Amino acid sequence: MIEFVSPTLDYALLAPILIVLGGAVLGVLIEAFAPRKSRASSQLFITLATLVLSLVSLISVRDRSSSAAAMESVTFDGAGMLIQGSILLISIIAVFLLADQENFTALAAALPGSDEERASLQQDLRVTEVYPLTLFAIAGMMLFPVATDLITLFVALEVLSLPLYLLAGLSRRRRLMSQEAALKYFLLGAFASAFFLMGIAYLYGYSSSVTFAGIHSAVIGGSGNDIYLLLGIAFISIGLLFKVGAVPFHAWSPDVYQGAPTAVTALMAAATKVAAFGAMLRIFYVSFAEAYWQWRPAIIAIALITMVFGSLVAIAQRDVKRMLAYSSIAHAGFLLSGVIALSKSGLESSIFYLFAYGIATVGAFGIVTLVRDSAGEVTDLNRWSGLGKRSPWVATAFAGFLLAFAGIPLTSGFIGKFSIFSAAYESGSTAILITGVLSSAIAAFFYIRVIVLMFFKDPVEDGTSVVIPSIYTQITITVSAVATFALGIYPTPLINFIQSSAAFLR
Image: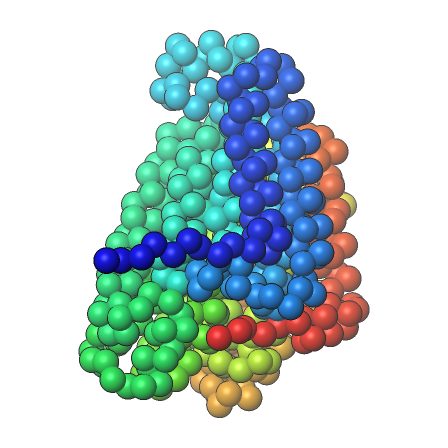
């Protein structure tokens, strides 16, 4: 007779995630019962209050001696909490960008160009479901890097992905492109989930366990079938590499970036990448550390290809969102250096890089929402010509974010790249260091090309202008810009904090 064992849950440690889930459920209730006119303000307040309260709760449990929040399914340690804090801070900034509701369609269920859609636009309706969907996605992102068994990891993957599939199709303009992006993102996510499940099956067959600790023990013991281990690592890695957008698993990622509402693209490009790399760091550092020589060559090859491919293809892009998408692919290659390093310095530099890159990314996409004409956002780079003369402050802010992506000194990007390449070099990955530096130089070319276009070319009178929709977008851009330069000029406090906290528990 099998005896049922009731699970032991530490609700204090789980509170940051539960608060976000509670706020999402409250948002659903507001959508169901609150008057339409008051929904937008109520949803924004609840979303921001939920994220701030979750951050406060996360800070309050940081010094607790207990680490197992849900037996062997969820474990809170220094690295996990740092990644969760990064996700929350980036999400708070991104929510201000979501608050400009003219980015979203009036009625999500209406067919593009239909009478129903025209009527909803005339009534000036607003889709406020984006707020609870965003909170559900953030809750999944927070669970993803602290999950310590494969089943919980898969559940977190689906919780963070499903709301984003919906959000990607809610653009107010270019509706067909937005819906195409949502469908492609869904198919991309389905492939990732399928590979991930195959990896879970093989790893369970190898170790008879779905916990990270159990897999680690099986790897050390060497009693299982090594073919199952290699297949499990391969399929799990493919599932995670889909989520971070590494080559050759980046298919359709640029299309999704281009077609989704820009505010949603900012959240996906920043917070989702932090969560995905957080989970990847944990599973490789905890479960697969002893199988280092089996997976290292393949991950190094993927990192090298990703860095070079992302940087080279970005040069040919004439759409600013696609350029940032391929830039994101290149950064995924840089971040894989931290996984390959498999050291404390690699973990610390990865966490700093993820946070710095996420903040700059949200700010850059915030700038993209400001350049418009009568049809909406203008993403054709040729029409950004002379932006520095039209709006010097907006162009300067965008130039600052581009310089951070390029890794220019006095920006957070320089500190991030220097630390992560140093960690790769210390681990003996000379090829990663050389390729990373050369790819950064290639990337600097197309970033500086955009800066030259904005400041040293005459503006074209084609109806393009800079529109500041509300105070919310201003907050996003200002906070992102200040943080980007502050972390480049004086990063010591954050680096010291990460060094004193970043560690995975096995």
